Image (cartoon, rainbow, N blue to C red; front, side, top):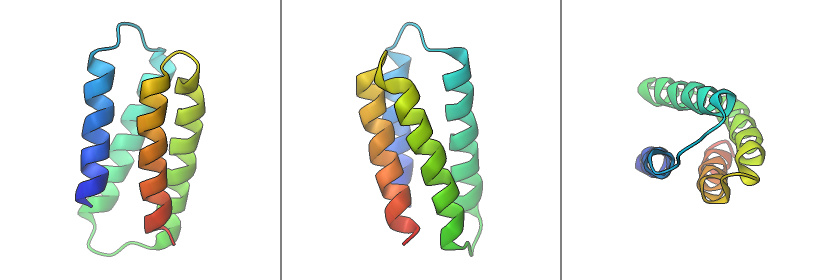
Length: 87
């Protein structure tokens, strides 16, 4: 769980140094962040819940890839963490 929170923190830190981010991508990231935090607050959660979040992260990775490759790499790392939790 700490690894996931750290990944989110790295993404937000990287974005804070980025001048222009597509508002739609930023909103999707905020939604993903909220969904992950909500899931982490629950005591029990099913692995399939992480699969949906992993897919959302992979979509975000693609969105950031062209204009913000460093952010895309961080989002890919988050997606990998989510994927491992969903096994």
